Image (cartoon, rainbow, N blue to C red; front, side, top):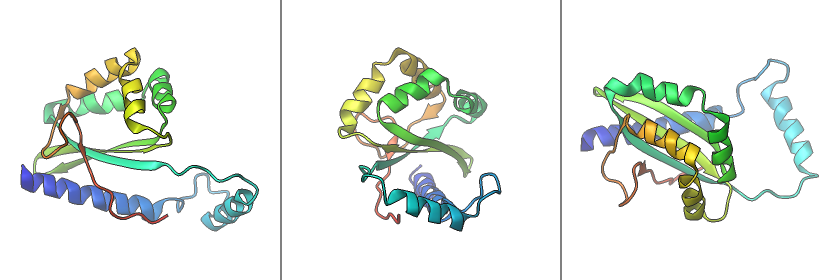
Length: 164
């Protein structure tokens, strides 16, 4: 699985690069060009107080091929109480990407953390009953990959490049 993991990591970087290159480039409703949105954001930001930067997290996990559809259904319409629990734990811009590599499906998870203590926020999230029920359901669809940090279900990816 080490070769597959290496390929999954490569896929993560390719997807991340595509996200960085394309962010802000697509016109949401066709009414405003990307250049206009950028100019408007620049003008608006001059009057705003500085925002605390968010810390980005990305991780990877294998998926059971027989449970892909179940996994997708659990994530297609995430219930409001789960979304509220994520936001209450300072998690924003939560995304999951799925990729098939050499007959193995992988889920790539990305989110931004806006708080000051990630471990405390994750512990807070873990005691939320609605979140735990949802997490327990989707974990039945997952297959952990190695290497990963002791005690972690997902293998955390190291961020080594960022362009804002």
